[in-house]
Length: 358
Image (cartoon, rainbow, N blue to C red; front, side, top):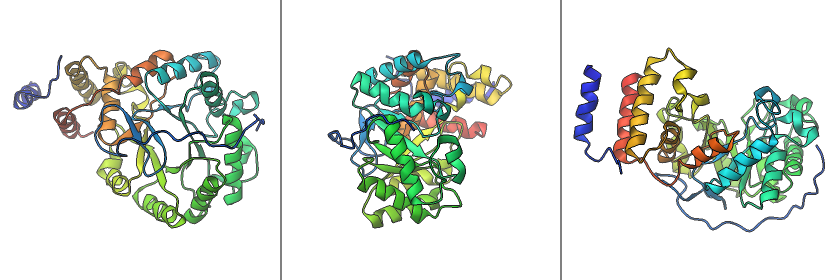
């Protein structure tokens, strides 16, 4: 009861808070035209495209993750099929989403059937003629070849070989190629040399990293800068329920270097959606947060809890990449663009998170 009183007091103090009202696919290694570059690479924004760091890429402020595409362990070919994913792709593009994230290991069991995540994305983009940004990532574990083929990952050459295989599966050069995560067997200099060679060979239009902490990101940035190539992005876990990157200064470090932050798991496996309570029914703190997010959504024109969660990340200067296996999910994710949580909305959410210890 006391907490409800405090929330009412906060609401009256913030009058503007509620705004109610491996198979060869005939690749040609040629670049497509660059998109018009607009917008800053960080900062609050509600719609529009944003630039990926200092690279030539501009893309939507919300993207789409494809971790489950082609993965039978996640229900591919049983709960959903390639046709469902194509409808999700089309709905996303129609809603303004132009950034799609994948990796060589996403649905890798389907590589031989040309229905892995990379293959599907390439096919959908080609079939629709959509001018989209496709970003993929390379595994740095030495024995990755047992999963996806090729040679053991023991040096720069093996990483570039893996990139060529990704390009082959997608059917064209990538827009963004990233190191999936740092691994002890690779020096940072070797990883960044692979990124440089990828750019020199025109196998990708931009390069990035993933799962890098602040120190690793700074080292990677300086190595790339020395080589004369911009480091476009760092893909990390970030959400309302996991703000470690912000608390530890990683977001600020990336902003200072003009490196875009791409946020995976922005909906925390469905916890930050209308069905979130069912994901963790005994979590009273989560229930309290979801109630506030629902209220914030109503005050912003009837936005869903998931859309509030995604827009929160956008206002933190990041690009969320929620997963989508259906057209309805893609449509909801696209609805996180075209509007913006204001400073009061963000403050109330941040205060609630601090109060709940989340």
